Image (cartoon, rainbow, N blue to C red):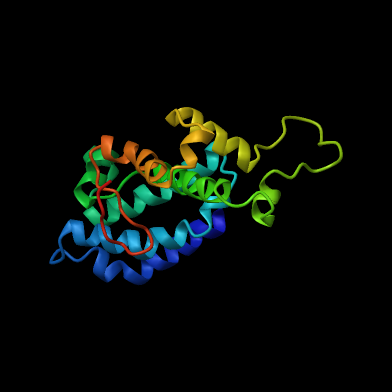
Amino acid sequence: MEARIRVGWNKFRQLVPLLTNKDISLISRGKLYCSCVRSSMLHGSETWPVRKENEMALQRAEMRMVRWMCGVKLKDRVSNKELRERLGIVDITSLLQQNRLRWYGHVLRKDDIDWVKECMEYEVVGSRPRGRPKSTWLEVVQRDCQVRGLSKDDVMVRGRWRKVIRMVDEQEGCEWMDVSSGTGSPG
């Protein structure tokens, strides 16, 4: 996780002249940020078994970048939500959740004999170490589904699944940003 955050900071530093340029609108800077910086930070996030402290580290790094882009200091007491709305971006944790759920739907719709689906359902033989076990990716995804009120039946209808996993971002009042292309595409 630290490596992905470091990659994001490296990309951000390369783009600081554009991301902090007052002649470029905040929305355009937000789109540039999503397409270059955020996409490099979240590369491969579909398969991360993210823990709470990992999410918090990503949020902290992102909000430092957002505040830098907007020219706002912590002592100015501007809320994170307001800054994200100015840039037209959604919360990074909801985007992480959306990426996981999108991949989960993709895998569940595959054939039962597909190796990716078999890997998802694979149980490792042997005893686990002492203490609280680390969360598996599947446990994290099941928690995401529970939070959003989703079931395995919803996955099989691809159009409805896409709409449902994007709903939370629309309810927050932010436009959903397509990470791969950097363009906004509502619901």
